[in-house]
Picture (spheres, helix red, strand yellow):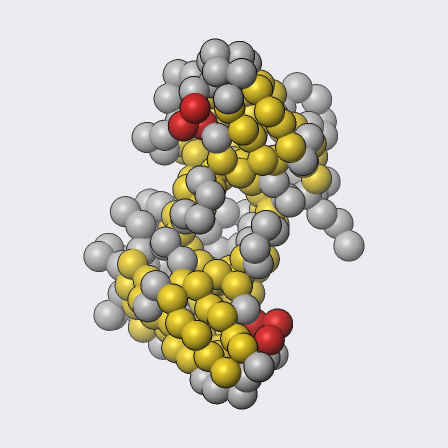
Length: 111
Length: 114
């Protein structure tokens, strides 16, 4: 069962913040975040493994609420280079299984 | 930096033909995957491979698909009789472990079935 992402798309001006949400109807063991630029492969951003865990990558951070079965990706002071499609991935089965990805959130940062 | 490499980068084939997509995973990785992405859509899991056998496969991975690790480095995806709807970007990925470790993606093979 694939995770559900929201919003589907967002447009930001440079310097603005955004939040991308990822939720699942089943128990989550981990959440993976990837960014894909047009015509390129998905690039790993971070994994969150524990409930309530927060991680950061440049000005991009994420939280994982295991009880609510959801994760949020926070992009602060966005840069043009942040443009792309963000996918969250959750494990296909009950832990230690391949990822299934949400439909993605298309982020466009404009000057 | 080690990377997953895929060949060819583009493949055009006629409907009904067989295609083989090739991947060289990162050398110390143990888990290998194929994903597919139809233009503008999400990345869909096809199959995972571990210890020389399929460990999981999705509903998409039907009898027309097969995977093989013919030698110590290559990992291939064969589509036996291609259909128009097989047109997509196919990504190979590999990881040291599964689930709680990062998966590294190759640059993909764009398959066009005409």
